[in-house]
Image (tube, rainbow, N blue to C red):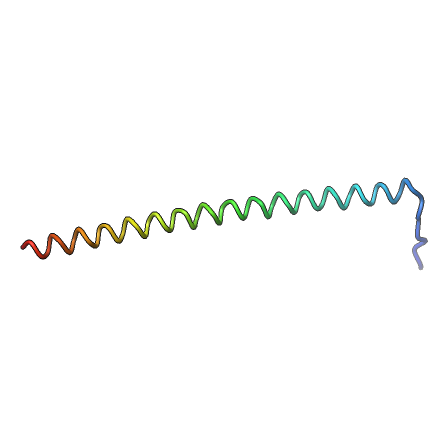
Length: 65
């Protein structure tokens, strides 16, 4: 069975609309992922800075003893 290609302007318009909707959905998913990734990296930098500061504090306290 072969499928007849339908090239009417209405069907092409519907197909384009469907593709645009899919693109927007995928774009939303990707944007959400990027935002979470940026938040994670920001948190990681802040946590690393805090860890570094705590290590310095521990080192100073050990040297005082």
